[in-house]
Image (cartoon, rainbow, N blue to C red; front, side, top):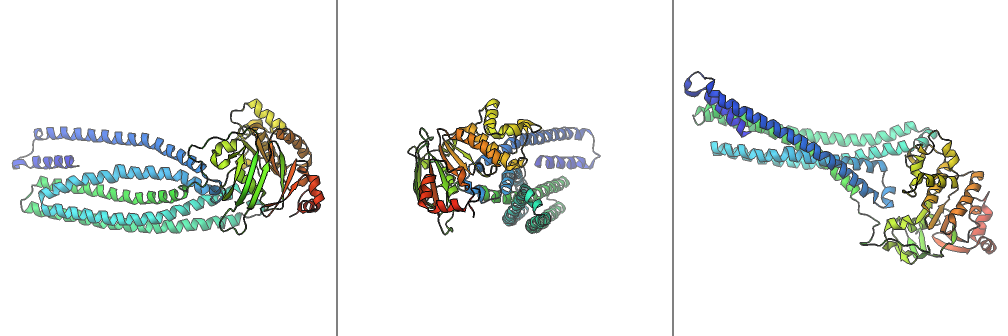
Length: 551
């Protein structure tokens, strides 16, 4: 900046030197200097742009990947309490906002602050009053700008949150599109999304009003600075304190400083937008982990698969009036097959969730082969448990990939063999792409029974020593269920099994049935023994229609 301004002063003074007509020879050296300066400037700009682009992309993609891993490590409750679309939007937005903010600071704000020091020193050299005026103006400009940046950051944080809620609403509606169509609620969803968009619109307008005020104040201050310094420089020229070349230099410096300050102000305004997005995103993503491994926690070692539940009391929330489990104790011997029975809300699914350590206990303990599950790593615990859930969720990937999820190192032949045992091979081969068929988000291209058979194939492939069946055949027709029951019997051999079922006929053959009510065990025994007791189990059995518990 100063080099160019000094060169401009030299041109002006050379042109007016001694009052004689200027000669070409007097300008040759100045043009050489100008060419060198322009070449150096072009090289610096090219290096800066290339370096930034090469550094930005790996940084942004790497941060996005790290944020994804951090979110994946969050507890089960984290995902049940938040919209997936909102979280995903923040994972995508934060890295971009951070690199954008870094660019504004590194290539706009900091260079402007550093470069402005030298013109102010030069102004001070010309006139102490000019230098002090410029310095005082700079302090005022920065103070007001910082105040407005803080205000805009606060507003944009709310705007960013509203934007995330819009994204969450969109994804939620898209995923549940079959429900929308079934109930003919397209108009309702349109209005519901419109309410979220209107909220974002309000915050956006609020933000840009503040931005406009900030930009207006900056422009007024900048204009006052420019004309004030220029007026004083002209006065110095008239008094003979500076030459015409000096006035040209002051003017060029003023222009460049004004442009640089204007650019810095705009970058600070944009930084407020990025800061608001970052703060809102970090507030969502930087949630303390609810379930964590202890430092240096060992891996779970399963030899017999004995399960011990001791004195467990658990509430999902402090606001919950009745505990989901209350003083629950149960010992399951190695290789034993037990069924959990009881009305809805009795605590059956809670037991499975706690065994998988999706939540930490408030009271009591769970041990596998004498090892407290809170003392071992979560991954090693879950590697030893296979789950066939009632509501099977698949990835939007191929059937081969979905089944192989049970054991990633499995060969294609092993995947196909597992599918055959789960009686899924025939319907898979009937599909146009066979095992390479994409199943759609959450497996929407498959029927409920087909998804359940894929889940069974996945569990067969995993071959874990502990098996959990949560209504594993509820979506199957009678003929398919009969075939699958044979596969499940083979799968259960040598394993410790916990089965949950409302159709009591599907678990009546198990070694032991645990009858639960209001978070407690009320009966324990075989099917025949429980019928003789004429308690809750007998009542549930009698209430069945086709083996299904009413209510």
